[in-house]
Structures are given as C-alpha cells and as structure tokens.
Image (cartoon, rainbow, N blue to C red; front, side, top):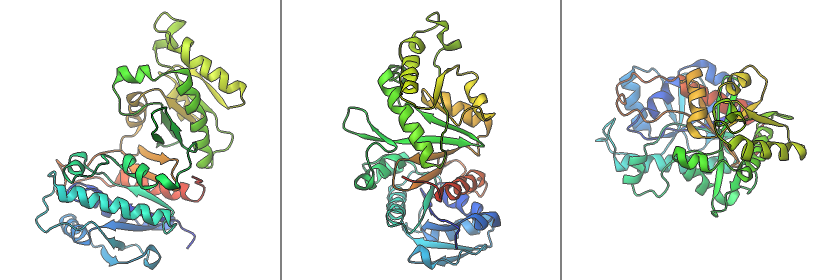
Amino acid sequence: MNRPLIGIPVGDPAGVGPEITLKALSDINIYEICRPVVVGSVSVLKRIGNIIGSKLVFNQIAHPKDGRFEHGTVDVINCGQVSDQLQFGVVQAEAGQAAYECIRRVTELALRREVDAIATTPINKEAIRAAGIQFIGHTEMLESLTATNTKRGTGSVNLGTGEKELLTMFQVRNLRVFFLSRHVSLKRACELITKKRITQYIELCLDALKMLGAKNALLAVAGLNPHNGEHGLFGEEEDMEILPAVEEMKAKGFNVKGPVPPDSVFHQALEGRFDAVLSLYHDQGHIATKTLDFERTISLTIGMPFLRTSVDHGTAFDIAGKGIASGVSMKEAIRLAAEYAGVYRG
C-alpha cells in the first residue's frame, strides 16, 4: 500500500477525458506504480466503456481508501452527473458544470490528503463559460480552490496586480521547461521580459525543482533573439534585461546560467547539461517539448499544497465518443503524478 493514491477527474464528459482515463487504466503497469481513483460520472464511464469494448468493471466508492486498486477494476467516486441526453463532442453547459464539480471534489480530497496527487483530463473553456463558472481553466479553478491553503512565495509570485500565479512546468523525458509568461500575445510576452520578472522566476523555478526533489538543480534561462542578440545587433533584451538578471541571481548564490541561445538550450537540457529551462514565452517552450514527443509532454502545476499533472491536449471534440482517442498522454500524466507524489513538498 505504499503506492501513492492518484485522483483522476474525468474532465468534460462530452470530450475524450473519460475515454483516455479508461484506456490508461487498462494498462496493468499503472497499478504497479500507484492506486488510481477516478472522480466522475459512472454512467458516462460505462457508456464510453461500451464504445471502446472495454472489459473493465466499475467499483463505486465513497472515499479513496475504500478502493480495491486491482487491474481490471476501476474505483470511481461518482461525481458530476449529467443527463442521458449528453452528446459527445458538443459544447454543453451541463458538461461544463460536471467538469467543475469533479475538479472541486478531487481538490477537496487532495487538501484532506485522501489522495497524494491529481492527474487531470481536459476541460472545455466554452462549456465552462456556458455553465456560468467564473474560472475559465484548470489553473484558475485550482488557484481559487486552494487559495487559503497555498503559501505565497512557494511556487507563486505576486506580479504587482494583487493576483497570485501558480508555476507551470512541462516535462517530456528528462526535459523540464518553465514559462516566464503563458497566455498573452507575443508582443506582451516580450514586454514582460524584464530584469525584475526574470529574477523572480529564477528563484521560483529553482524552488519548484526543490519541491520536486531536485536538489542543487541548474536552471538555464533561454535567450530571446537570434544568437542572443549579438550584443545589440538583433535585439537588446539579452544585454539589458536577461543577463543582468542572471548575474544578479548568481551573485546571490542561485545555480543559474544564461542567457543560453534558444536554438540550442532545449537540446542541451535534454542531454542533461541543465536540470530545467526557463522559456521566455509560451510557444518557445511548447514547440520544443511537443516536437520532441507530443503525446508524452505533460504539464505540472507547482505551488499548491499538492501536485497536479495533466495531459497537454484539449477535449478533442472532433473524435470524442468515437473510441479512437489515444491514452498515451494520460498514462504519462498518471505516471509522473505517481513518480513525484512521494517527494513533492508544496
């Protein structure tokens, strides 16, 4: 029973979340590394089971500790009920509401230490909005649901707006990537490349690696411009903002290097020269990880009292309910949640 308990909310029931969950739990290897508990609608899971021809049986439980945790049996906390008229692959308010209820329930379980980590499946932003939920994505929901339990300064940063930002890290194989900015325009992302912000994130990233059990980790800060700007020929950000931030943090004893040219830093990290890379904007890191292995690129949310991993794809409404979704990403998300659950210190 030393295997960690991993909570798995099924996401939007009209998307591929229920299907990839069942396909991941069809792999006996999952049960060798963890004790998975699904949080979602049993009726939806049974519908999907019939579509994919699954032989899995469902054990409805009230608490994670009541699970059987045997390959061939899916332990389910019945949550997020929807009508029999639910349509796969369609934006529906009831699906958005159900997805939120499952996330809220699994968060409660994690905060009570009834599960050791969570591995989430996709939700649909339009469905969430249609349900009148004020939080548009997983991260925003989790920030709110864990707000009174999250310590400021451990995996989050006050950016001067009064809001707290959890840290996102991608992992694929041994390549780990953080992001200086997420869902903003490229123009805005470049404006956010300031010495102050970079110094904040260097500290946060190294703290996050410690939370994941990586002691004395070396962080590389990516450059922005071709050839690191060639001392102002192709841009001044490296000389004016990035290098001064790195030098300041090195002088304070932080294990950081940079700026490292962005066309080589990810390859070098993959070879083991760095423990992680701080990407300067969304697509810089996304392209590097997803090109390496799209299905096995997993997102981790760091800074909450518990660890959250997630597949890095959407609800795939175009193939939802057709039985053809791949469970590879979900298996990898569960595997990483189980790997880090024992060492994570949020």
